[in-house]
Length: 523
Ligand code: ADP
Ligand code: MG
Image 1 (tube, rainbow, N blue to C red):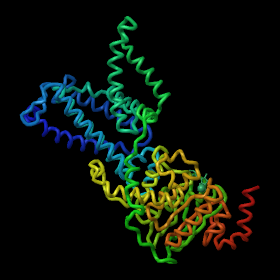
Image 2: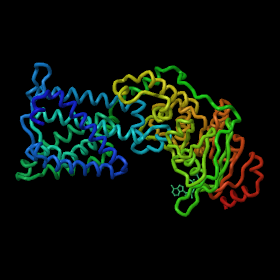
Image 3: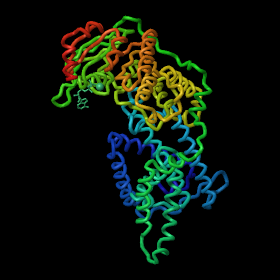
Image 4: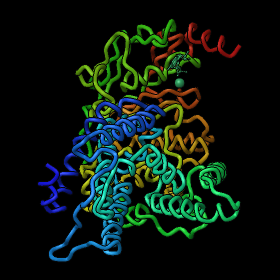
């Protein structure tokens, strides 16, 4: 087989290589990507070790001796058979991959990818299919590795399993850590620093110590410890802090787009029609019934307050309605249809969006980009379009929508700051703007006013009234009773997972059982 392939053009084997890599990565990914945390990298290292031994034992691949006489790549009649010529081809492909990677990260899909590490639950609640996206990232990384392997074999004209043993895998990991995995240029810096430093140490250390030995491994280890200690995010983010910052692509785009985004809006249901119906909802955590036999209804165009002492089960109820958690019993209907078995992203698609009590932002991402994640389902452009920068018109619309919603919540002056640098109260406002970007029918707000000053609370109440007037329905969890009482149409009170009372604000204020629950809490 191989001798026949040798006769074939390397350009054909490139496609074969990519197809095979894609298939292998998809299969490995399907098995491996279910794992989370450190199990995922550990498992990929295990695959690496297993495949090393597999290739080392396959006679057809020359076992550990490898294959030689790999033909040179040629472009037309030009044969790239010297190192220098292949060097240019390698850079050409590397730069294309870097630009594609940069373009991708700076797009609708890229924003979703950047949430995957720490904020996947949040991303799913705005309709991102996080499993599919992880598989896609895995596949893309594998394809890049496939191209690299192809270049490597045709550059050295020789290939053996030794270049791909577990140490090589650890080196790649180091490269990412040294350069910084959050930035594509981190790959270039990390790879250069590691490669040059290792060679250099190998030369200089034996002279310095006047003895033979693998000193470079020890010194390199010490340098890595120092680096991890001083710049945990890698060299590139540290360098960028000293660099004069040019305008980011998102800033430029957001400011070119029209003042109001012209994204189509969802038709809201008729005011007063049945919207949300919660029936006998149940959720147990071990022996604790966090939500127990909870039933209530909401009509379209209503602001319903969900109140109760700490630990009453309000946030859990939100998690059940939005499918972050699956209920142990009961059912939820939205506009007449069962939704309690739907996925988070399916819920988002139907127009239910939420904020999180524990702020769920990507801290290093700008306020504008965090907010634009909310508009994920209002865009169509995928990864390939993003890599080729064919998504700019839509991207401008999405960013304009994000800017518009941020202005509405009073954060128009903070668009380009890192979300993590805002005070907590304002981070909550970013969460609201992000949910509004999804153009929801039902908005679930979990303690939106916590950490806001009096004036900011009044402005928020004003905004929520305006949203209601526009036909949006709001389910609100909040502890500030002045804020709640002046705003909501009706209240549901929870205590110990159960519904304690339901009624108009003045009825609840005079309800004996409610007073007791609250006063008990204060005591
Ligand atoms: P609230 O939002 O009303 O303050 P929660 O819904 O957050 O209350 O919590 C209700 C109860 O469920 C609390 O006793 C809390 O400790 C418990 N709880 C919430 N989430 C979990 C979880 N993931 N695992 C175990 N217990 C939980
Ligand atoms: Mg809560």
